[in-house]
Length: 265
Image 1 (cartoon, rainbow, N blue to C red):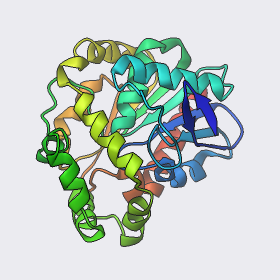
Image 2: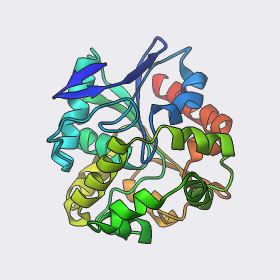
Image 3: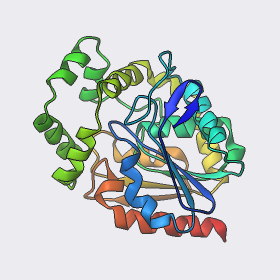
């Protein structure tokens, strides 16, 4: 466990070489990256935390979900992990809000960007599910009524190629603390807050190696948002849902490995 600004953070740390930081989304943990880590750990040091309140990490009681604070949390994590050289950043879902905010604030610490489906734009429309979570009492009730069967149904809606075993693993990692943090995070997130951050990100993505690996059949984030990051390369994967790293692990694992190799040459 690392102590990062009062957060007790579980960190997966494998491999040797240039560092790669993986930041997961909701309702995941660092486990979502295990397949991709296997592809590159022979040539890279791979670091993947459970974000505060998720999985085995414990969030500080007063954890602040503003973009400014999310960026500071990631920087604290980088320092506590002993990373002194620029790193490759890989993000998905709310991990994008943590990681991309950090990249905007500390661009000199970022060697490359790999962005899976995530929202980092003031133009993003909340989905019905997000609106439920953002509503006091209704969000808590929805969480309480979500059985394993209902959770599986929603996950299959988001990514039909996920196996029951993969969904069960995610469900089994969900804790009361994670449910509370998810509601806190989405209720603190205002789309207007991305104004300005998104333009700074586009500027950064134009100056360093950057790629978007985007699954076009994601019901939560429209395909058009793949082009909003200003990345130098956008690769689209029709027929895959929100969890591309789990649905097409070998496919995107090879893509990530090749991309990182190109940044070294």
